[in-house]
Length: 181
Image 1 (cartoon, one colour):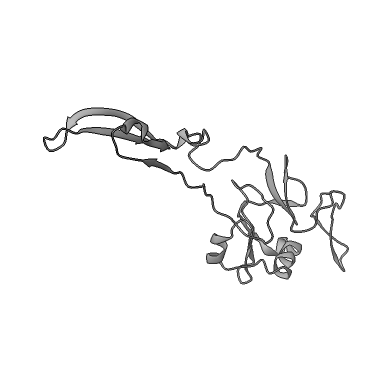
Image 2: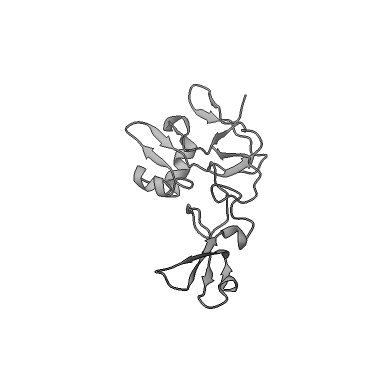
């Protein structure tokens, strides 16, 4: 018998549970394998009647929201549709689990990148931060005596973290996010 399975004696229904891991129904944990009595925290829609303890946990803790609200809090909330007997579970896929004072979903973000360009006689020395001096072209503007200076912008000049990924990616060890039911 596996944890999470139903057992009946004809008069009552029991759920087999393995309490040795210390996790409670609704706990989201990271493990190298999907454990018995757990469901992936991948945003799937499941049959609610097959997960009565998980549904009760979500309802008792005011974690059930509408589909539109779920899209803003998909990593922490559930969607319950009683008429369809469905429960959409949180989606922790591709997210870093982080401690916080409240149950929220955070969007990716980076700090601002700044630099300066100053005009003057020594143009090459007037770039800072992510801006850099590329070259003096020698071309003249409007027939005058002033050449053009070309500058560039490269965030990796401020920090080597820029340019290493197409998205915000901290160093990570990926495991299976799962919810105890």
